[in-house]
Amino acid sequence: MRVKRLAAAFLVVLLAACSAVRGSETPGPAVEATRADAAARVPATAVPAAPVALASMEPASADSPPDAAGSYLLDTSTGALYFASPLLDGVWSPDGGVIAFARCCSGDGFIDLLDVRGAVARRVATGDVRDLAWSPDGSKLAFVPMNEFQAGTGVRVMARDGSRVQAVVSHMGAGDPRWLDEDRIAYTVGLPNADEPAFYLARLSDPGQQRRLDREEPPGVLDPRVIFGSPSADGAWVVYFDGPYRRGEGRSVAWERSSRRLIELAPRLVLAHWAGATHRALLLSIDGPTGLALAEVVDFASGRGAPVPGGFESRWAADAQTVVHLGYQCRDGAPGGETEVFATIPGGPGRNVSRTPGEVEYALAPAPDRGAVAFAAKAGDAGAWRLTVADLGTTAVHMSFDLRLPVQLRDGAWSPDGRYLLFTLGAGPGGACE
Image (tube, rainbow, N blue to C red; front, side, top):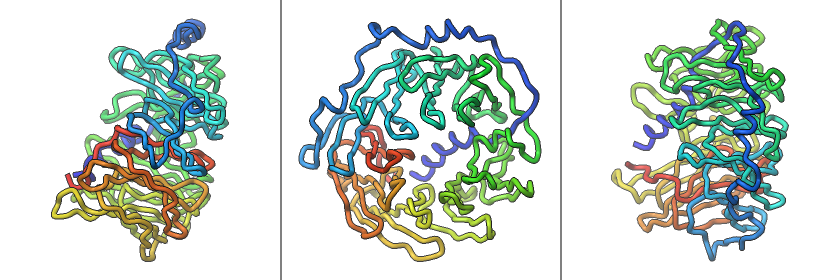
């Protein structure tokens, strides 16, 4: 079932945060920064040509939709569609000016940086890499180089323009770097299905050294359950998964910093999305006995909670008051049903935003700065897909495109200012009733 596939995908994310560690300082492997820098960067004359920039392409429209696989940008102010990259899963810089793309695990990988405002795409490095992460101020990009066995070999950082590559640490099995501030980067080591993945902290100001974060109870400020969990905007509450996952011994908990109390959450395997600068969290989880995806809004300030429909297909809207979620009606367990998008005030009735015949895609994407939501659905049995941007306030469709390939939307699809929507074609499975 689709829910089970969703659960498996989210477990990969949860497994990176499932164990907790903190401890003593341990020197990391020696790093020869000059050699690492040379290996990570390639002279401009040797770098393969980057994809065609936005400015040199005629924008597509609803009358002439694109039909090539890759990543696209929808300018919601004009309705124009632009080809961005043949790669998937671009990562917006915090200011929305650059999208970073990476190719991995094929032996001919690279990093492309697309300047959205200047419509310029540049290939800044070659080699298989993954796990791109922008620094909080957007001036640097962290990434993990991969070896021929598709294992991470450390954490590297480059400047926003692709220059000044620094080997922060060389560590076999490294992955999933997370910036704590402009100097400190936390990362994991180990396979995601291990019982006890290890967590480490490295500093740009002290390259080649790492601190292993060993487990303690209750968690401290450097505990990876805090780093890799879901903290509220003010850090007063953190929701995270505690303990080894594979043996089924872990639990989902909420931790209050001021009192250092732990509240166990049920069911387990919780992901949290906080409503802006509040203590209200949308908790997405999987019910153990049934395997169904569940969603609940909990106000940790008052302790009150309210279930909402939609499971993993639920997200906060920009107003931090409304939960947007997908509903789907199958026809006798077969494809060809109907996709519905709802807006719900927790504890109140749902309001239908849009109804589209066809199969639901795996994600929807509320805009970050206004009352709009993007979603995609397969239009019945015809094989065409429809990408829609709807207005949550008036329930009116802002724009809609029929496309020939599967559409994939992911978290972080919108630019920070809400103008551009980044989506992929040809990358998504379909079928809510499988």
